[in-house]
Image (cartoon, rainbow, N blue to C red):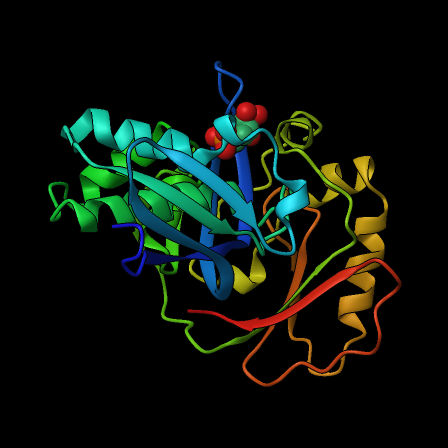
Length: 269
Ligand code: C5P
């Protein structure tokens, strides 16, 4: 059976085109309003039939990945199997391209790809709402990643409605290769509600930029570098950083980046 072609699922990277933090909730999470978008760029997940769950991580960002048993791919697989009674087991191979702790939802994208892939292999026992509900238990961004289309998000990010069609827009992702864990950035938010996210999301903001820059000042350099790129339209940080993006209807050209920075041109899906 292991000779058969693997089942394959793409795990698009997530970006937050805007992210307004509105309140700190009693459980430590934050009420937010965001516009999620997804790129053609992402991770690639393969599954082969096997006796038990296993995971191998390969690819340019494999070295950044933490302990395999904590990986959201295996956690998502176990949760899916216990929710649906899915009897099969798989050996997963994750080709890791999305930098971790980078504001691109890498782990969430992998969890969501696992849920979609297993649901497909199982003959679609769960509808999208049920799949998103399972995803919400794995992380605040996982439901949006299950959809992987432009979506407005609120609550912790798990309350979703369809967003505008921005597919084909050019995006340039830049990360200075400093890992920025999400929790500390949210905790560094100053607690000031700067108002709701409206339809004109371009006029919005990412309220986590200032706290992320306070922890990793190089993020301000990334934003400045992107603003100087010819053709860069909107420039903003994604999620809790450190990845920043430029977004434009036209191609974005860029000079050589400072040594060690990660630069990835892509398009919105
Ligand atoms: O849900 P997830 O594990 O992806 O979230 C990581 C961390 O980000 C949480 O532990 C929390 O500190 C922070 N977070 C938050 N408010 C949100 C989403 C995430 O404070 N809406």
